[in-house]
Amino acid sequence: MASSSSRSRAAARRSPRAAPRPQHPPPAPTGRPVLVPFAAVFGVLVAAEYLWLAWLLRDPEVGTPWFVVAPAVLAVLTLAGAALLVLGRARAWVLLTAVSAVLVLCLLGTAVLFGALGLGAVVGQALLLLVGPLGCLVLVARRPVREWTRPARATRPPDQGCRTQRTR
Image (cartoon, rainbow, N blue to C red):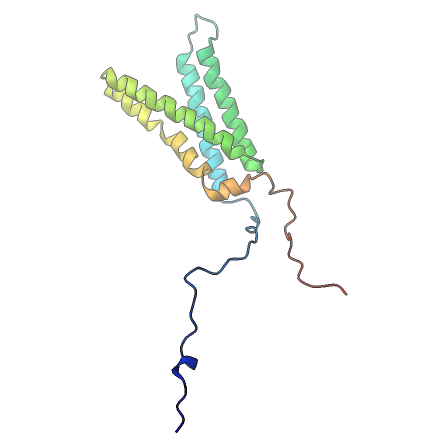
């Protein structure tokens, strides 16, 4: 009786490295992501907080100093960023991230200052105001929102390089 080799029945040896994945670009989003309107609403909330800060800093007896104009300008930039985000313009999320981060730093500085002065109620109010800019930062930094506002989204054709049939 002839014996057959056991090597022919053994499983094929596999490489420890993963197989290379095809280098296709990710599919373009078909429509506006659900997170975009929520991020825009939080952007409007950040603008309202900037306007509230400008109103608190104003002095009716004095003209309009720079420390009142600065929050007002940041509020206008925030509203512009929220509008550009809804429209899907390139890098709108960067603008909203920047103005939200500035407000987070200002509110944290205010909380630390009033905490050092022993005014616990004001510290609580400053920390409560962090909900707006932190919510905006969290939503704007998500991948669907960033993909929605990437520069080449509107200019790239949807079926880039997908021709598989040959013409004779």
